[in-house]
Image (cartoon, rainbow, N blue to C red; front, top):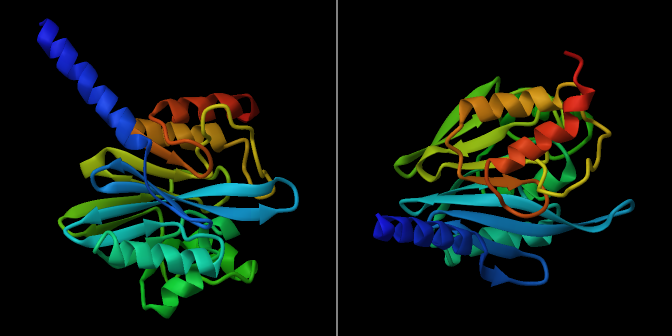
Length: 245
């Protein structure tokens, strides 16, 4: 019994250490390994209101194929990210999934299109990107879309309005990992940019995610530190007072 408990503690500690493992860092790009096949990619956006903001994306690898979740906000960082995946992770990029239409999600999308990398987003995000005169993702979907990367699935789903009207999440069953983007808040974070938000539905949308995937172990927010399902609970609590029902 005692031995099993110690093994369990070691496994938990190993996961925590993995989540903090920095495997690449430059002026523009940081890569951290979360699981053997799932990575945080962090780049930076210079803003008027918040200064230099670290922005999270993610990478998933299966059988030397990759999908990237969100582009960096600029071309230079995007080229560096593409180079890292191809040359360091030794994987061909099969697609880039855009969480929502803000610049920290698709500011570097043109560089992916220049290399004939397929792009995916909700139909609502595509409409909003067109209206905002952004580079537009090429493959749209309604509420859900499943991609096959190597021999694994990536499930991209719209669970409701929150940070934007078209924000999605991406869930990777093999990793029990979720890329939540800006609709999921890191522990201790503030509300952030609410310009395009639906704060009345935000908590409901996050609760829908939690109900669909109660087994989540790793959650990547749009900004801040990677966590677990507690990030969903934190976000629900942050906006629950704004619910209309």
